[in-house]
Length: 620
Image (tube, rainbow, N blue to C red; front, side, top):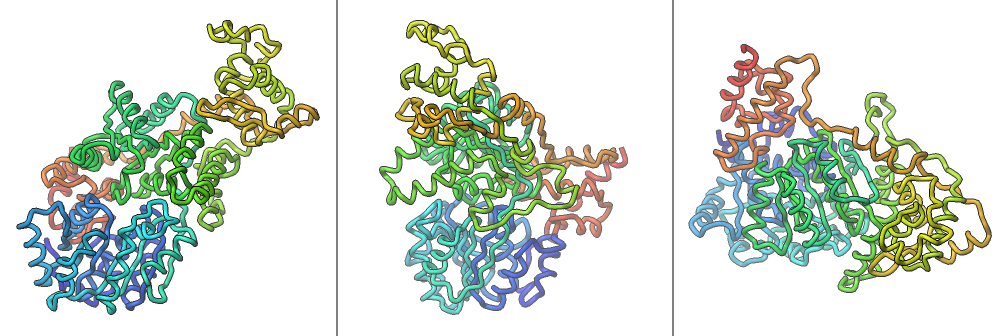
């Protein structure tokens, strides 16, 4: 069922939301942004990934008499958005290089005839003469211009794209069109850049909470990276996940290891041929592969709502980049995990690339914020929100606090522990080995290892050999991380050699007392506790004998239908819709229209099949 272009002109937003999109209520700030746009007032909306930014322009597009132009950065994103809109009954098109010439001409003709409500173009495409001529023709009325991923216009943004700077000139061509800028991550500096560089006219600025409360935040010291990755994957059997690495080599290496272990995994980075990269992304989006291992080249604009875990195998360059990456988890609001594996060695690697940065000092400032987050012992959600100027207050409701928001809060605030003697032992061992070795070697000496290298160096004869019986190896690594955070010890050079800082030497000389927030049994206690946290994204009520079978049947049907239509499964409908169908068990079309995410077009197209599945399970 297709929605006619004039069907909802001047209609109330609430009616459009229910009849077209199948939602009973707006998410935070959606209605305010939509109201501003419908009143013809420019707006900047800063909403977290999964916060429902698309509705803010898709819904007004149906109410406006003309066409809405959406500037989008990626061809793959345009494809997904158009597929989702078409499934909802809204006719939309994109104009980009992926179209055959006949397809391009057909789309242009439909635009001129007024049959299209939403047009997607890239910033590069918008600057071409043929698209500007099309939009300037008498047959086309531009009601709204939306700039998605608007942070790309700021040099302080984590993904600056010079092509975005050309967008502002479109305002001169269409002065009467209202302009909406949308982004998921924007500090005050980035927001000001967006307003200035897009030439927004006295815009209303809407800043939603950056709190993605369904995402559990966790940082683990990177000890055995592959084992830690596998532990996370095992908590998410059958779920989609993204693993981010900082280099192509690391991406390929980790992909190869996981593949050999039998995991459903593909890689993605700029070094792959375009066709391979596009094919791998397409398989991931369509649930044909479970895990994608990628560099930061992957993910901007990915609409896949059922990503259940994001692992940062390496340290991101900034908190903005980190927030954008973990934001690709749990876009549907269901429980998801964000795991960061942190090694101080990553810092040196990142700084190496500062030599090529336009502003190394700015890059260092951004990196310091990331380091502080990863090494801190206070609530991670509190730190992350503070970066965006938001204060986090934990909910008082007992139901809301049953699941902690991060590893720090789950483990509880660690009490300060007197680690004076262990710290002296560890730092003395660094000095006795002449400050020429890395962490693993020094801790091996401290805990009495007799490997070939230690014996050949004569370090089994040192006074500090085998005196470290206070902690397990993990405990000593934990203490070392704390000493580095206190700037008593530092890692230097390409091989992360341990050296004592001037502050560290003063500590040893003065025999000062040292108290640090160290776990009682070393980090092993918390690694075990972490592994017990399991996520079940589609979990029916315990007393519902039919729900689980309905969920299983619906997922199989959705996958077959998506394959037939050559679209991602979420284009049919998301996991939240499956949960709601399983809970409500609709028996007729009227009841089906009360299900989350089922509008009139989807009820018309898929309703019979859905009702048959529910009836078949319940009558079995």
